[in-house]
Image 1 (spheres, rainbow, N blue to C red):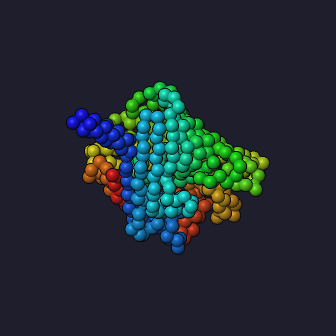
Image 2: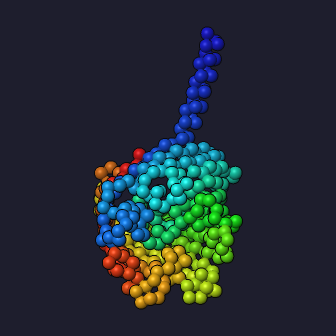
Image 3: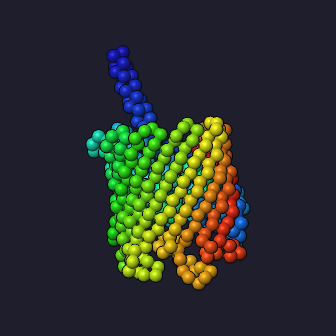
Length: 354
């Protein structure tokens, strides 16, 4: 009898340990489908400046993803697998099925060291529709990096102040395109529960091997503010400088600036309205490329846009959205169909998290 009791005790202890370890794992998924229309009938169903809902006039899958995460007191890790138009259009072909894959440990209290593949640390908007006010991304977000690979060292200085250092292969790359590394910084300050201010940057030589190096300094500022339970405000601004990249003077530095301002009004828990304004100016074209303008001169992209969207959430983990966007480039930049400098677009999509 005593032996049976001992065996039962050992079995119960092992079962409890296994159950405890199992609790440390979490499994989640996300699916978003869409239909999109715009009047930029350029003969290609792949739309310009559209990393989300990139194909017009088709019922399509934005993304289907599944995530497995492990969280322990001193160790954590995650892997997210993905499929759909977002990864096929924005990720390199060799890595398009992996959104994130990283592992990390905690060598000291409030200090984490992680290594692997990550979503970018830069930007006011995220890569996925579920985390944003609107489905479409502002031009500022479109030209920001989406993903990165390397090492992240993060530290929580206090409940109100945190930071991280990122040592990366480069700007929006998984595999290094040269023998240099880029370094990034994140500083976050949350003085109140309804206000958060975040500064991010990324500095490095982003030229491929075989080309003369040019240092790029990318700065990003994000402000999140909720003056009431029914109103959320999002502000984002980017300034990037790249040496020896001037369009008319290659010895001078090129400068890009962009920004967005968005507000989300939630009259009820199931319905919200969002409005966003955006600007983008890359006159030297070191990020957007060079455009031959209607007057024969050359310039990088200069544009602005306005987006209005509606969202219905029948349950907390699912949404239905409809939005319309007006996007206009500079008067001399006839980059849309029929030599126009503006386009109108509309997106409707359904998403669910589980």
